[in-house]
Length: 212
Image (cartoon, rainbow, N blue to C red):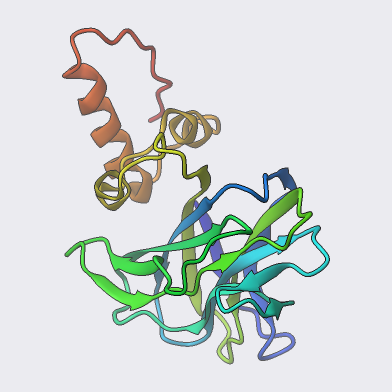
């Protein structure tokens, strides 16, 4: 769980978030980028996108280069104190797709509340990173939470959308959440859901980390 609290030492600039390390990608394959977020105020904006080591960071679906590819940019969720999931796709370099698949989803209703912008890889791209920011706050103390960033190769083995909407934590996320011996209230729903999956699978043997 990432907590971003604006200090507005420099107003209208970065107020929290991340750039991941670079990871390997194949420009002939499609990838899905996911993160969850919750805002405690409408101050500031959400930014969610990628960087890459390509000649440009990504290509728009219409074939033009994009040096600042954001799935969502300067985005405000419909409601405060509610979790949303943002999904963006970077398609293979040869895709003929012209419409985006990604979107922002309400984690309570499961409904898509906004569209995200998809991209495709610039030929020759071999590495990418995910980036997510809380941005442009004007009031000190404004807060946003991020949770559960993930990147998946879209080859049929990726988690179904329904699982992502359930907020079920992966085994890796459970390990990370429990590594500090603390499971926060925001994390408990995912942990309990995953625990129930494993308990109800009679063929599954697993030892889960625990926390208070």
